[in-house]
Length: 357
Image (cartoon, rainbow, N blue to C red; front, side, top):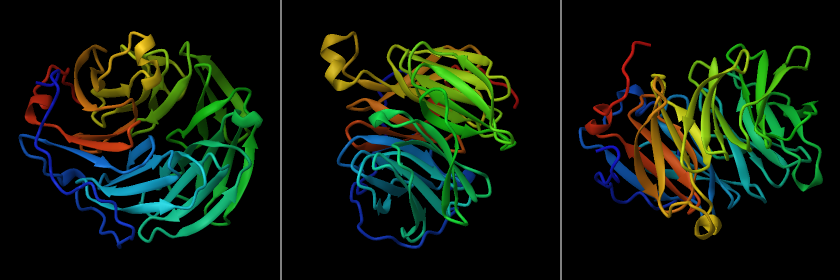
């Protein structure tokens, strides 16, 4: 059952990381993904240090990961590793992929951003932004990418813009707080960023005026992820809560309460389920109420109740993303491994509230 530790079939031979790139044939999975009734579970060692972010591309046939070992890794959604993107000299904290899966942007503690050609792994452009990069988000057409930085290392935080055509980076605004992640709304006229104090701020990009700031968490917001339609987004906070927030007025629509700090959360494209991941840091386990196991928790959007969980990592889970089809998810942990779990039929028979989208 969903609320029991899940041990579906493991596919062998998925732990090798290749040192070369091959030309990608995109669209091999997408909505036509075949999982089977029993599902499957893969655990792939992709990084030598903790994974900071995992993301499916827009079509769902590729997974991109980033880690504190200064590399980003590219996998197919079936778990086969394609290659690595090496070029940074510090931890990579954020990645963004354009909708066509042609371009990958990485942001690092080495205070630079790199624009990569996805199929070849070649560097298309690199820019020194002078701050530790914590958040990235592409415009739909891939011509611009938002960049945000917190105030770590004594630097002044910023929100900036990188133009993929001119290869120029420019500072857009100096936030009043310390941004952690940044997102564009559906119209691409507005952005929101979360900060280390638990607040969300929205900015009108047409005049660079802050429209509203709202403190919706009592502790740091570790991540924000958009819905497929980008009319709302979901937060993950150190206060052990995750919230669905409206892009327009920053009103909280739903609140999900977890037992441990939430590092990341994601919304299913069907808008009926939410997955939250996190956990107490390993160094804090013996001095807190934290558990030694680390789970991905699933919530019903309508009732906000926890429906079940999967135990898939040996360390704190730092990032999660759901496949566009809703048939599987991927997560990245403190131990440097990526987990891909395809849901068995018991998941879809679980007590989630059904409704028409």
